[in-house]
Length: 181
Ligand SMILES: Cc1cc2nc3c(=O)[nH]c(=O)nc-3n(C[C@H](O)[C@H](O)[C@H](O)COP(=O)(O)O)c2cc1C
Image (cartoon, rainbow, N blue to C red; front, side, top):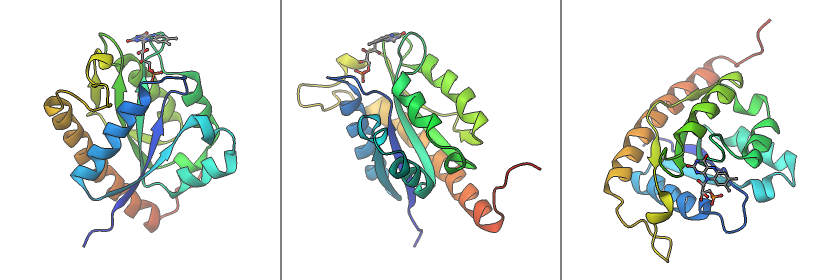
């Protein structure tokens, strides 16, 4: 049997009343519905209080899923603080994105995140999940009302994430991912 890939599910908002809780919970449920992954939530609300624990959580992960809103055509500052708190823990692992917002579905935040993660040797999965007008997509209980299309996008993203996650896990165990000389 395949060893599950361990995913750090990183929340991109720390705002009181954030929609990130609904999008993050949906994302985690979808990851488990697809199967073959274990998950651990990294939430900037508490992760930034204990940098050592944050770095350990990222080091344990075989890959990352970032759930991000779009703030002023970019991602939110607490997510940047999480990213900047670690270094080698990120390297040679893949990241998939679940984004949300208005018209753009958070894609402008994702494009900027791809640049940031490239600096940390994180492979950005091209297929992503974008939720335009995200606030209309969840009912009062936080359930997604029309999940079919986002679910298909999630399936594509997770298929790629698994490929990269397994390939890079094998590569890291065959050869340490070192600093360039
Ligand atoms: C400071 C701020 C800036 C925002 N800028 C954008 C934006 O540029 N594009 C967009 O689609 N939505 C924008 N929004 C709307 C957010 O996508 C929406 O409020 C979303 O719920 C934020 O995620 P959160 O509730 O998890 O914090 C902005 C919201 C805030 C608070």
